[in-house]
Image: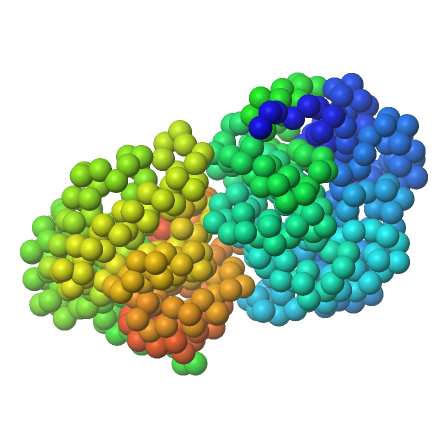
Length: 275
Length: 275
């Protein structure tokens, strides 16, 4: 498999979140020939959704996803505040014409050890959000997070688990596949086949470093770790995925400290050479 | 479910590995009324297997497991050195009359990104070890490690994956279930049922801390984290497990720095109150 041209990459704003605003990210993508962008909502709100949508459109960028809805377990119940926040996220995804709204579903409620209870909250929240998202023509993408985040970020941790939820909830919901979270899973090939084109809604790339010095913010640039990205991209594409390859790197110790134009130049080069 | 009496606990020597020799661990278990022990091989070799077996027997302790065989991927091939080391581990487990030989199977070979290749090496190594273990009446227990160790310690990361291997290899092989590694898995209940009494060969307890400051050595004392240990123990026992509850805590920042008699007293107290 040949490498990725920059037009097939998308920049998740988390990759330069310490350095750039959304407006700077949009300009940076243009400058480096990157084909798409995936804003986080904090940066989107800073800029304003309408202004951001206009700037992204005028820059000729696609939106590979909006990060993030979800967080259904935070308040211990699916109350109106949780529902409303997710509705706003759906509205923003619609205004951006995002390929999907990425869901980080939430971990255990504070002080709780009740994992089955958390799973139930998540499914209730997803169902209610999906109901509204269908009316706005927005696709909902569950992002299974690495199991090391089960307690504090997301208690959906494998493609199998996410697809079981999708099976129960019906059309319009699928998965955001991030190599960092699922690379280790011996079932990945089978579950990508099970997901199929309609349910592989996003494909995120970065790398798993050895050693990993921090559970959250020590993710690697593609090529610096142990993930066989071409194999995983091949599996996604063999099952029909034809969207952008979204680069999302949480890296407090390295890439967040660098000149963001150097970061984007490296992203483009690694896209060509190791992805 | 009522708590655990100390006689139903076993001390994995890793819990006080920085403080005590195996001989001291054996005496410590006696002093605190703990019913069993699970030596790591480095400590076993320091004391000598025959001397250790005698001391453990005289102390009236059971051996809930020997840690560890495996590490099949380290040399990139299942060569004679790997086979011989695992045979020695089997012999040691037999001499100790251990409930099982715990297998930490190994991660990616150095410099490799070939996870399917690593899985194949692991299965070859397990098959060869099992063949010999059957002749010595030693049970082989695959320990699925948390997916965050897939690269550098074990590329078998779920109960489902371990049991798929067991299904292919036949009798005499099962799982060591450590709550730290599998607590997050929505399939745990179903997979423990699938495993059944014969294949739940060990049950290890500790806790998942939030936040976790280090991927390897920041495991918590039972009760200090988010794992619902009684629920998990209940699932194991409902499927026939009646062995000891082995306490294995890697804790460079906390328990390894304390007076080991304080550690054991805490283990006993937490066994009664939160397990």
